[in-house]
Image (cartoon, one colour):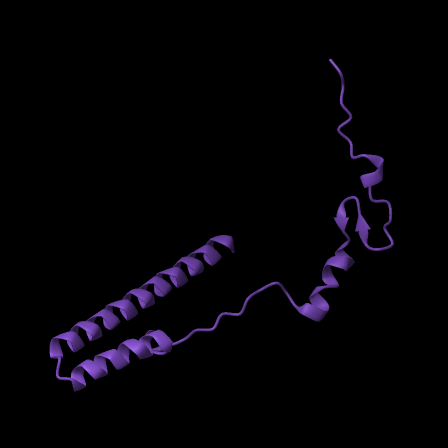
Length: 115
């Protein structure tokens, strides 16, 4: 049975240590260097009011079109059509808000697991 050389080939070995890189990784001084200008690798969390987040789903081009359709239906005295359009808008807003709320909860849970 042939014995294989499992060591790193010579052309891949790292010999220069003046750059702070050694075969064992970065030196402690080099790991602190990026922290000085850029800060730590953390994200800031912005807490927003859930009511404002819910109301934000009524803001945008598509909700505006749906709202205009509901208003025009009401002005034409087509109450059934207007009611259905408003109901569909409310269902859409509710589902979008609920999905984002659940995704936020999952992210918080994952962050707690990782810390």
